Length: 162
Image 1 (cartoon, one colour):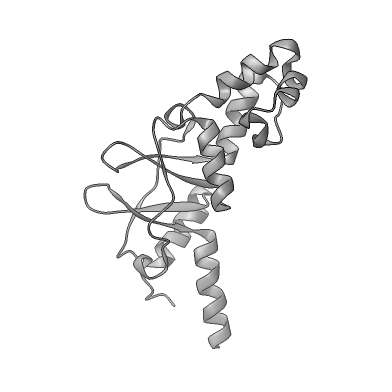
Image 2: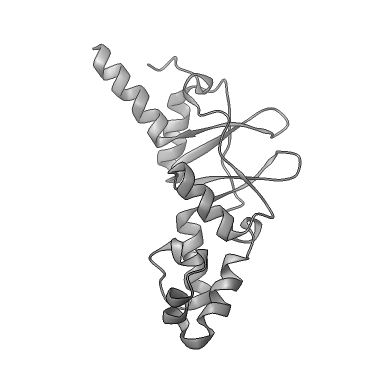
């Protein structure tokens, strides 16, 4: 198992968004793909950051001043928005929903090369307490993504073979 390389288990192409993607669209992409986070790329396809549901919720709490437990509320349901911040809730929610991924993302990103051993990625995830690692080429261009789910699939397959 320790000889398995990232390129053998990564998801490619990786689901990603661009720096100027709005949070409204970020939430749609996360929901549509049943994922909780993804890389943010610049115009050249280089990894600029990572954005997750947690980032969106933290940003929303910071702006709105109260926890927002359902990111779907950013998709434009006026009745939900009004209940969050009173009569100005719709404006506040629209402001949050139109904020870009580049503003909210985590910009300190741990990346890995596709030839790296999977065990190295596991150690990174544990050390940095992260759930996904973008796979990049020598120029920093996104080539794939390794998530905890990808690693668990390998462990499951390995265990079944024993």
